[in-house]
Image (cartoon, rainbow, N blue to C red; front, side):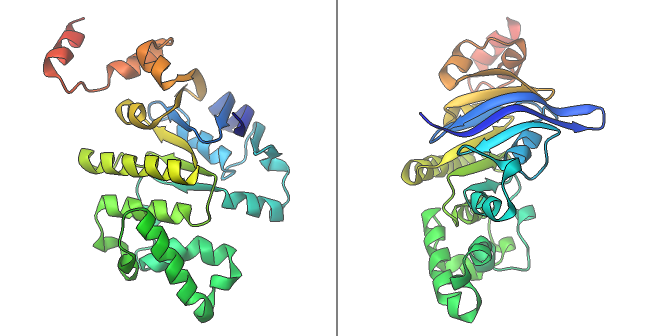
Length: 266
C-alpha cells in the first residue's frame, strides 16, 4: 500500500486556540479515510490544510511525496488538479446564475485552453455530458440552472464537477448531511461505484457514524484538534479504545427501538 497523503506535526492556530493540534496522519491510495468528530473538533480545518486552502502554523503536508508548502506556483497548480472537494451544501457552492455546463465545466475551462471560447464549446459540452452521465444524470440537463434540481441531484452535479480534472484525491466534507436518508444512500452508493471504477482516494469528513460505517475503510476520530483514535472501520465499531469514540458510537440512533431501550438502560 502506498501513501498518497502524509501529514506530520500539523498545527493550525487561530489566536490562542489550536484548531488542529500536532496531527500525524496518512491517507493510503485507494482507501476511504473517514475523519469524524463533533462540530468544532477540527475536521474541516484539517481538510483545508490538506488541500492547502489554509496555511499551517506548523507541520508538513505531502501529496504523492511532494511537500505542498515548498511547491512553486506552477507545480502547485498541477498538483491541485489531482485534489478536489465536494462540500456539504451543493447549492451554496454553485453560482445560481450559471447553467450546469458552466458549473461543471469551470475547472476544465480554467485548466485546458482547448475548451475555451466558441471553438472549444462543443468539446466542453461533450465532456460535461460524459461527467453528468457518470453521476447518473442525463447529459441534457446541462442547460438548466441549480434551482431546477433537487438536493440529491445538485450533489451529483457537485461530484461531476469534482471529477472533471480526473483527480486522485477527493475530499468529501459532510456530502450527505443535507440529504434525506433514501437520497443519502443513493449518493453513498454512487461514491463507492465511482471510487472502484476511477481508482479514487477519499477523505470523508462526517459527524454521522452510521454513514461512516457504510463507506469508510479506516476512521480517524478528532477531538479538540487532535486525533484521539485511528483504526480500521471494523476494529473501531467492534471495540473502540477511546472514551470519546465510545460516546460518539453511543449517540448513533438504533433502528431497533427495543435494542435502543436496552442500550439506554445499560
